[in-house]
Each structure stands twice: as C-alpha cells, then as structure tokens.
Length: 304
Image (cartoon, rainbow, N blue to C red; front, side, top):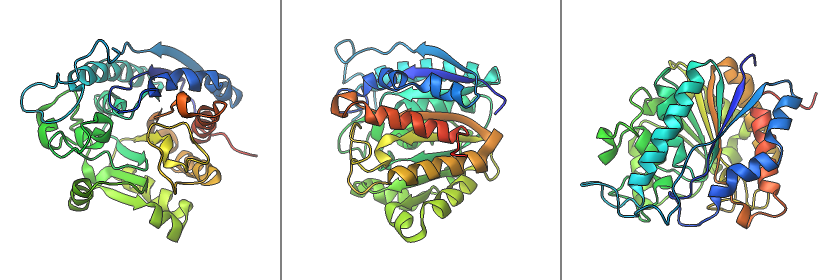
C-alpha cells in the first residue's frame, strides 16, 4: 500500500452499558500497533485521540426531541462529528484512516467522514447486528444502532451527523452474526443488507463467506470501509471485548478473513476501524494484541 496509515483514537464508551472500552485505543497502541505496521513497510502516523466526554460530563437523556430511547445521543453526536472531521481530512490527504475504538458507535463518525469524499460499501465484522433505532432498541445503547444510523433508518434519517447518504444498504455486508434481538432480526430480513451468520461460516467456510461479502460491499462503490468489532471472535480468543458472545470465529479464521479483505479490496480500502476492546475484561492484553495482528493482516502482512 502506497498510502500512509493515520491512526485516530476514539476512546468512547457512552454507547455501551459496560465501562472499559474507552481504554481500548490505549491498549491497542500499547500492544504495538505502530511498530507492527511499520514492520511491514507502512508509514504510520498517530494522530492522537479525539476529545470524548466521560459519562460524568454527559447527560444520558440528551437525545433531543423525537429521538426515542437512545442514551447519551447528544454526546455521541458530538464525538461522531469530531471523528468525521478527522477521518474526512485523512481521506482528503490521501491517507488511510485507522480508527481505534471505543464502542462501535464511533463507526458512525468514520462512515460519515469517508462518505464526504467517496461512496464506500461497508464490511461489518460483528457478532451483533447494530441495526436497532431509538424506537426499537431494547437497551438504549447507541453501539447497537450504528448501522441503522449510517443508513439513515428511523429517526436517523434527518440526522446529518449520522446518515451517510452515499452508503447504500445493498452495499453493506455482515460477517459473523450470532446475537440478534427479535425486532432487529425482522428489520435485517426486510432490508437490502447482506448477512452472513456464523451458520454460513460453519457451512461454507470463512474464505467463501468473506470473499462474497467483499464483493457485495465493493460492487458499484468507490471503496470499502471495514469495521472490525473484536467480539466477532470467540471469547476464548478475544476475552476482552465489550459484549462477548460464544460461538465466534477462531483465531485463524479471523486472520484469513482479514487477509482476504486485503487481497480482494487492495487499494479500494478507504477506512479500517477496530472497536470494542475492553482491557478491564482482558487477560494480559491479549485481545488488544490480537487486534494489532488482525489490523496488520488486513493491511497486507503475510506469513511468507
């Protein structure tokens, strides 16, 4: 890759119930992200963290009129606007934004920032659908609404900070789904997004599934936004995540997935983010170290 990688930290945990993912960017940096990327010949610049209010400084009810049940929506908007500016500037400069979360709601800012310059597809690697809206959510957690927000569903339709108008549902592909609530499952089935569950991975293998997902996300688009939630992995491989779910992909399947993304997307990769690392729940920083490995695989590192 002939572009510089610009690391942007988004240390937010307002979108989740469980504290700790705000420390994810620091843990990933400590695990050696910059050294790993430079070791495979990539220029890597750390752009620091965007400013994020803590829950003590934010109002969980500040969502504005007509927003339904969405905790810390006002503060989430502020953070996503800041991240979108940083990502947009990075893309405009010809660099690749590598966003380190934080909870998965930060992906809203990444998508909106990329969308200012290109209209990408999205490959969403996650155990969860993140397809609820403020009126359908059972929890009120915005990290469970990120894809719905990006696609302008429900009350997000008029939210310029969230709705990435250039991203179409038919160019969004999920890999690794295994935990959905009833209304979310119904909404996904009725939408134009493409879903590959863990059952699909079991039946067809990770190689075929990810290859198809990349094709869905890149057909007729200007690029590929890859959003890697570390809970797509089985908790035995990645224990330090915000919302662990049994039955996820293995260590080797995850590396294979990222290698396929790199091979098939190539220069079309417009953004990569790694989210939901929670050092409080981790063991010897192994989840953050794995996040570094997977990011490197997605950016071209190979065994030989």
